[in-house]
Each structure stands twice: as structure tokens, then as C-alpha cells.
Image (cartoon, rainbow, N blue to C red):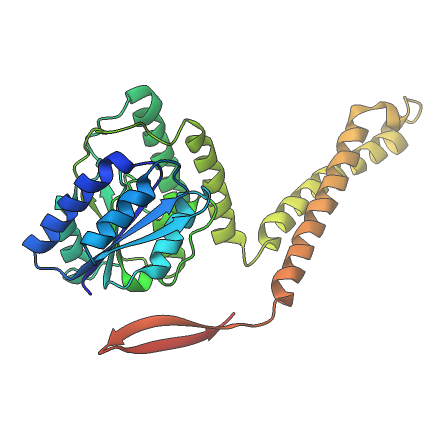
Length: 324
């Protein structure tokens, strides 16, 4: 199978028929073998009924239904597990992503050998204040933190080599950072393509301003896990040592000052430097212990033999074995 089109959705019944017909016309024009996977993330309208109707008409249409809203990341994860195509395309169901972009995305994966191609909605039809400006700030922070040079991390239109989606796990709200997850998994051949952005035709957006707050928090999480997940002592231990040295230096200063310089002065406990020294040494010790305990937890995990797919030839997977 050439393509799997994975489409997570929530209450998009009005757009599904048009989106399906548009995708099918592109697939038939390019003679692709394909499947369309609609992931209904707990819709409360008739979205599932529409998916069922489309599936009865077109055998290439498949559906997965969540009984409640779990979020886009979980929907994509379920779609990735069910996908069978050599190339997986993700897109939103609100008609803001253009299916006409699919052939070029497919060629970039198959011909150029890229692991992942992310769409870049260079010209947007969203509100400048509520979406465009926060999105630019968010993407700038993501580039600086992750080292992945993309202009639009959150674009729903992306193309993946099958090996990528089968070797990453999307959870929480990490769908924004799939390129970062792919890079951390060893798939660093990541490209970008300018794609058309279209104004929403039906309904309203399902995401509010809180997505940017959650996005920045998730960015901090993925930065920490990718950089210090296997070596927590390098962060907590270093901070703890610095804090302890600062506190200990203040303590030495107070001792010398009391014993040699200002013998008849006020009590050490009456001086603010005493509390700085005490607090710094306590915090430093706690941070160091947190790093030490983190190292014990990491190292006490049972060694697991994992396989990284290196190449796939004639349905025979050549694997590189490594132990963590």
C-alpha cells in the first residue's frame, strides 16, 4: 500500500464528505493504493455516522472511535499503529489542509529519502493576535530548544516514512513535537515544504489560547527528557553542587567574620547571610539527592534489548541490536 491518510477529528461532520471526495480524487488521479483512517476522538455530533457511511461506500475508508475525548496525540498514536501504508500522511479534518499537497509530500519521502516532511503554512488565514503571533513565538522557542529547524511545528499536514511512526510513541500533548520525537529516535533526515493554508469552512477551532501554555510546558518536558532523561545527575547534581558551594561560601565568610574580624558584633543568626547560607546548602543537598535518586532509578531499570530498523529490503527487516 502506497499511502495511509491518518485524520484525527472532533465534531467535524460537516466537512467529512467534502474532505473524503477531495482525497479520493487526488488518490485516483495519481493511481495510489491507499487507505483513509478517520480517528474519531469522542465526537458528540454525527461524525461517526458519516465515517460509517463513507466506509460502506469506499472500502479504503476505515474508522477508529474513542468513547471519549482523549486528545489529538492519542488519536494520532492509534492511527499510526493501525496504518499500513509505506508513507503515512497526517492532516486535519477541517478542510484547512489541502489534499493536493499529498503527491509532492509522498515524492519527498519516497524519492528524496526523507524520514519526515513537515508542512509550513507560510501564509495563514488565522487571527494575527490569537494565533499567528503566539504561533511564531512558540515555533521560535521550539527551534531554539530542540535544534530542529522547522518554521511550523504544529502544522497538521505532515508526511512520514512508515519506519518513523512505528518507532515513536505520541502521548500527552506531544503531537506538536513529533519531529523532535523522531529526531530523538534517530530519524534526523527531516524536511519542510511550504503548503497552502485555507480558511476554515465549517464550525470553529477546537483549540483555545491554553494550547500555547500547554505547548510551552510540553516543550520544557521534552527538552528535559531528551537531554537529561538518561542522566538526571548532570542537571540536578550540577545545580545542587553550585547551590551548596554558594551556601558553604557564605557560611565560611560568616565564620571568619565572627571569629577574626567582628568578634563582639551581633549574633550570626541575626544576619541575613546566615539564612542565605542555610537555605542554599539545604537546597543544594536536596537537588544533589534528587539527581542521585534519579540515577539509581535509571540504572536499576532492567536492561532491555531493543532494535532500531536500519533498512527494509523485500519485506526483510535488517536490524541493529543495542542494549540500554
